[in-house]
Length: 211
Image 1 (tube, rainbow, N blue to C red):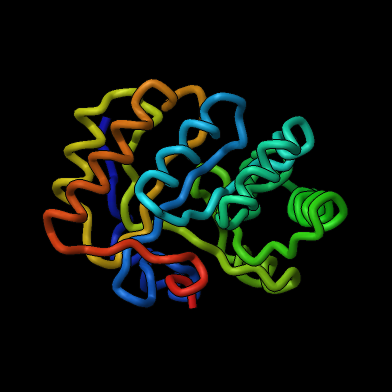
Image 2: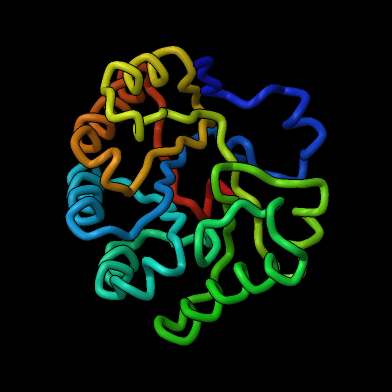
């Protein structure tokens, strides 16, 4: 298997309306697929220790199941992004199904937490030419990435390689809030923080990184 830590430049150019890097030369941390009991708490504790803010791209059905974890994420000052309600790949859905997946997520956040969702990330990072116009209907910014750590492989050496070779001052980094990455998530965040510190890179708040 070939690993693609950083998406090809031609893709970034074609889809220039998407966020592939931060806009302020600071690193943005993002976590996909949560919230999940145990794993989310571990991540929140680590972020608190390092005084970092992140975007949690959550799955709507997990929000429904674990509302207390959503409250913890928000209470710690982090942002929550739309990762669809059921984590379905967009291109496999009809237009109406896509609308439902996105709108249902926004609704559960608004109705249960009074939260206005600003950011979106497609499941598995798969999108179409029509994705941008679709998101504009909801006023959402599509946040992709410039560094995929493959932490879900549950291999810290893979994460170390990714961070050492592909981290830049304006990286949007993907980690996962899931059972697949649970065993290495503490060390993954530590490796990322130490490498950034060694290079004199700084982390940013989502609101400043995604202008």
